[in-house]
Amino acid sequence: MSNLVALRQKKLLEELLKRENLDDAILNAFFETDRAVFVPRGFKNAANSLNALPLQSEQWISSPLTVAKMTKALEPRGADSVLEIGCGSGYQAAILSRLFRRVFTIERIEGLLIEARQTFKKLGLVNINTKLDDGMHGWAEFAKFDRILLSASIDEIPQNIFDQLSENDGILVSPIVRGNKQIITKYRKNRYMIVKEDVEECLFVPIQRGVSKIN
Image 1: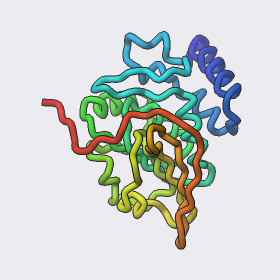
Image 2 (image 1 turned 180 degrees about the vertical axis):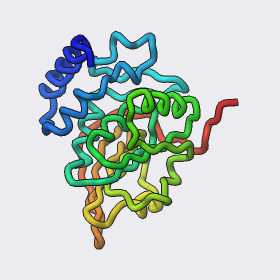
Image 3 (image 1 turned 135 degrees about the vertical axis):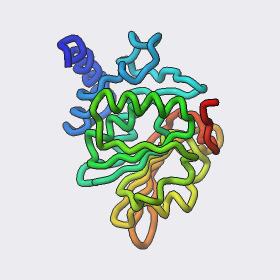
């Protein structure tokens, strides 16, 4: 990491800490992950702002603050595997790769996934597994996951996704649509029940079904 990048990263951490209490492991994951690598060329200068930025196919890369809040809600400490539904540019998955031994991420838009895979390879992030698919299928082959993260909003979590979450204090975090609002919502699962907790309001693109391949 160059001195210039390190300086940018330190400034980003300072901005995050003004707004959210984050532990050292999450802060280190953000410091080691240069968001500029994941944003389109025309937005490089804004990469370390706290703004969401546009991607191809009417998708967005979330604000670092939103990524931090979602990551914190997952409670990564002590967890081994995480499934992300909605890879996008790969920024959230890259953050998770510094906190989990195994990361599984699904993207339905082939163009986005190809770019994310190239970025992961460039950065040497070998613990991220990727899949082109409708995210609502989950990834049953590698279930059950200690943590599941939805990076797009949805009205209700499908039962088949809950089925892929560990019953040993598994945690699922997702933006849930309630009326005209979206709420980051945390679900904690054990053998007997799922307990729901509201985190705070947010704004994500909605979950879409099917797969969009490059023609």
